[in-house]
Every structure is written in structure tokens, then in C-alpha cells.
Length: 96
View 1 (cartoon, helix red, strand yellow):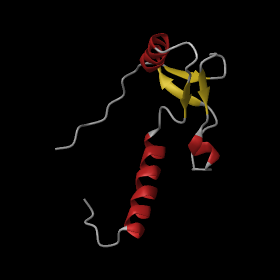
View 2: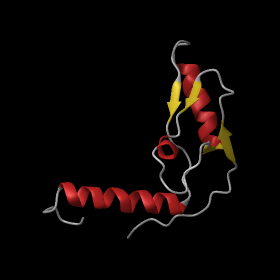
View 3: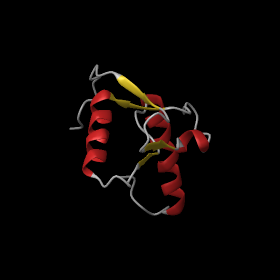
View 4: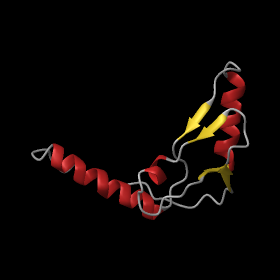
């Protein structure tokens, strides 16, 4: 039985270059993956935990975010895209 996915209603925060120790590099946008955005969004609670993690790290450490929140359509595209790549690399592997 697979877990169901439900909306948490927690606000999304756009990660910008405003934080001195959080950098973004939207990898899927750079790879021109359909429906990808130049901005990276995370849930408010995730952003708070990222800031907490930075407070625990030495001051000369930073975080680089490649991705964050993914709409269902983007996640579905990525799953299909990578599944096809794996099938080409390992044609004799079971689908599971």
C-alpha cells in the first residue's frame, strides 16, 4: 500500500539570494526540464530548519540548494524521464 500525498497548507517561501549563506542553483531549470522554475521554493518549516542547520555549522559553511518544492507534474516528469534512462542503461532489470 503506497502512502497518499496530501497538501500540507504550509506556505511556500521563495529562496532568493537574500541570505548570505544560502545559495541557489536551480538545476532542473538549467537542464531545461519542462515546468521547472528559475526560483526555488521550500515550505516555511523547511526554510526554518535550513536556517537552524546553518546556525549549527561553522560560520564559513554555506548551503547550496539545487531544488526544493516540486509540483506533482514536475515530479511525474522526472520519475518518467529517469525511469526511461534506467531502462536504457539496464535493459534486463526488472521494472520494480
